[in-house]
Length: 371
Ligand SMILES: Nc1ncnc2c1ncn2[C@@H]1O[C@H](COP(=O)(O)OP(=O)(O)O)[C@@H](O)[C@H]1O
Ligand SMILES: N[C@@H](CCC(=O)OP(=O)(O)O)C(=O)O
Image (cartoon, rainbow, N blue to C red; front, side, top):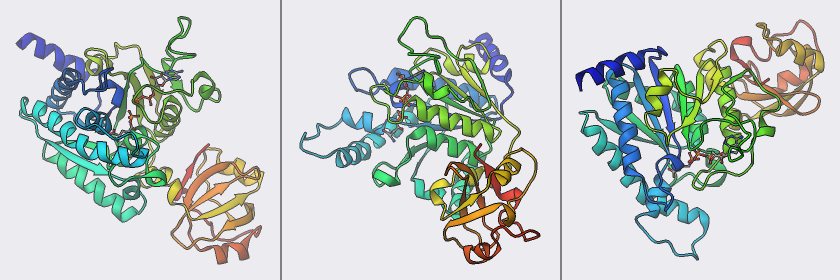
């Protein structure tokens, strides 16, 4: 036993992460018959406990409320999809968190339930309140178990899926890595079910044809699918956080991943961005104004150099905004170039369109390039 533990200590230190966010998909912890896979949950908790005991901060984002609810109640077929989801999640989340809590308790570790909605990330003050709460949990050696609050998050107010939520949490907490556990070994260069397909082990920067490898279908209990997972992973890696997509149904997946011994997909991180840029990057739905740029301004702004958005490159203010609002910056073909915080409102910006020597509309420190 002692030797085994010492070995685990060495294993976990190899990648050198200090803070990780682990996202567990519904499929990982749900059996084929739809019932929660308690032995899988227990095995994951054992690994997370080992990792935490090495001094690594762990935040868990776990799906599975709806799947857990299905095991507890029979839903009338007449009930619509939204209400069914609310009902199943409301009941299932209790079971899910109790399962985690009892397994963590065997390691003398406390976990906390943190349920969030997309709205919680929109307003910067609200965002910082949530960040503060998660940090205080971590400082008190508690493992936050985060899920979307499916009871109140409906339709357009929902996250695409929990991968998006996990990306937001990893960015908010400046994690070193985000580990997404699904029921496949990673992103394949073709249909994962076909023999000729292989796992793409490293993705560096934005890969133009990545989406073409991915089948649109998703797994039995999943919500978003692999396309949303890979889009989110590229965005998070661009902010400076390593993203791993691995198979959570494999034994010892976390320990072998952290020991660099697992075949999976790893997104190479770019240089780390500031906390404010990380928030701006995830704030597209909170944007009010839309500003169109000419091609010259687009080239300068996306060159990777520290340049601010000057009125000389603006060709149109499409939607109004106030000073301090998040604005979308688009090119002549209406593609998103980036997001930024407006230094002044749309009235002033309109007066200055195309003019030289005017104050920047978006300062470089508050600009996130989506390209
Ligand atoms: N090229 C691909 N590589 C890996 N998985 C893929 C690919 N194309 C489609 N998929 C599907 O994506 C699924 C994982 O996404 P999703 O259903 O959202 O899972 P989760 O519940 O883990 O979030 C896999 O089960 C697989 O069927
Ligand atoms: N919040 C939902 C999970 C939704 C979701 O994104 O699921 P998945 O694609 O399996 O990560 C639940 O707990 O059932």
